[in-house]
Length: 172
Image (cartoon, rainbow, N blue to C red; front, side):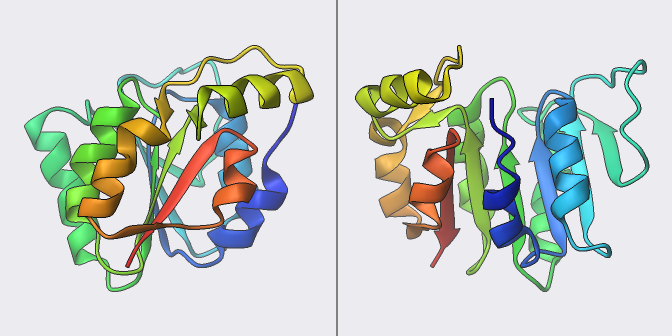
């Protein structure tokens, strides 16, 4: 299908801290590990760790539900304590909730991304055909436009990332 490596290489060098809310997707971890700055820290919050997959030591895995108070407070603390912009990847079970909730804590220059994203249903269907893949989209522009405007988020490398099923927004 596609790797997204070219797109992620464009932005990963801008971040010392990358927080991923997800589901232990080996291809994403491989991409993050290979494209980030060597000194960057990747923290991944997952419901459980698949012990049968070797993710290497470049990822700090933390078991925790991002919708639970203690995990949310931990993520908020990481965002607030960072002196440099952070990258937050929403790729968990409820991407819309993750995007809405965590966009509240972003600082100027922080970037939030959401996976399985489409600008519109038509865009998504066309891209699926073009890439010959079988995905479903979980989050699209109409759902997040109000929070994007309210939280002063701007599209960031938007066309590049929407073409690999990611929405990408920077706090202005």
